[in-house]
Image 1 (cartoon, rainbow, N blue to C red):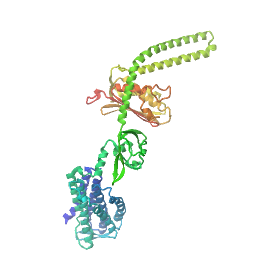
Image 2: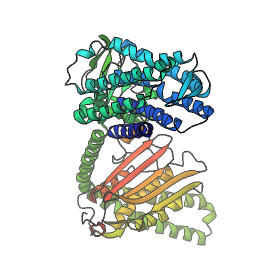
Image 3: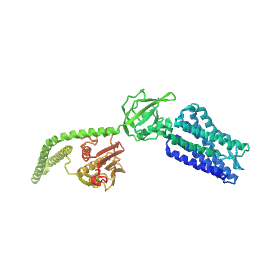
Length: 593
């Protein structure tokens, strides 16, 4: 007798172990989750039977019997669901019953566990205890038997499938094993007790053996057990390119994980919504889309991502047109590379022109600058002379106006000289100074000391600088880059003054590279302007606020140091700039500079 009782405990332990092993194999597959679910239900059932044999109080035995309903009532529905999934029959008409069956479980199981709807009591027999059933038993039993009968009716074609099909083999093991065990349980737990025949129940042991057979089948066939739908889903979800399925009315019927990552939304938030919510220019009215069509995907945050849309592939659902599938290839890296090539070409052209322009303009500008300096001295002398002759009051207005004009001319010439010098920095070999090892933290700190003084009081500057980051560079030029970025961020707040504005500066290392990050929540940059921010003389600032050379020169300096500069921005939300530079060879533990 003790051996029979221990068999219940063994069945529970084996069921739990098998469920854990199947989930560990691939918890992402629905069939695996369903198989693990009915094994866990069986473990609950078997554990209840083991505890039952330790009881002497009929009230406690009745409570245990009722709790065991949580294990045996769902078995039929879980068996049906797993069998349909494994046999690739999720679209069969009988599958439409599954949601209603689960809904019935949500109603019947709590009633069976908490009330006498199914079990009203327990009585002692030779093998321990026997439940006393109520009329609700037939409703609960209907939830077990109906799914089994539905599968038998709908599986006529499945019976003839070749035995070499691993998924069908597993479906047969699950269905016939569980349904056979349920038939045995019906006899030993319901029919025979009603006929006053005392037997020892062994249903949970049979279901545990079914779990062993499932594990053996999984071991034999491996990943060929994945159903066509699950196999297709697994393939689609491993693709780097986004795949979407568009219904006849232009609604988004399905999408793979790449598309969900692209738009930054969950599947429940995009399915059955118009595709134009995500791809505004999608041609719904046309029957087809030409191959390699360029479009833009709008993310949940409002950003736009350039993509190439493939030609459509027609999809069918049970012989009827189900929509069209499209592959969306992310072009952000390609567009970024194209932008860098264009910027490099433009900077090279400016560099070639700057040699002769600088020489041609610098000499006359320098001469004009010197002559204006002499004129300023002479004008001051005239002013002193008129003052000694007591004529200062008569000519005061003319003298002051003349002094202001000379000062403005000198300021304009200085500005011209500064622009010419900046243009000259584009020429090859403009970084003549020898590179040396420097702490990026010290360079950024110095730039913050200079540029930060111009920041309004209501702008909060946060710095997170790693003192161990060292780079081999021309320190003055890198400081110039940092200062340009800081000044741009500070000026981004001027059009929208507000308290609590943030400017964040960070220095760190990642994958053997030094990273400088400058981020603000200022006015941001329009998406149309992002393509041109590195163009010489292009600026989004008001007239007189900038020459349009700051970012262009910064790009040139960073490239000359073997680095990259990346800018992302959203109008009205702020701008983020990341400068990626090689770390000093002495600071690289692998010796890779």
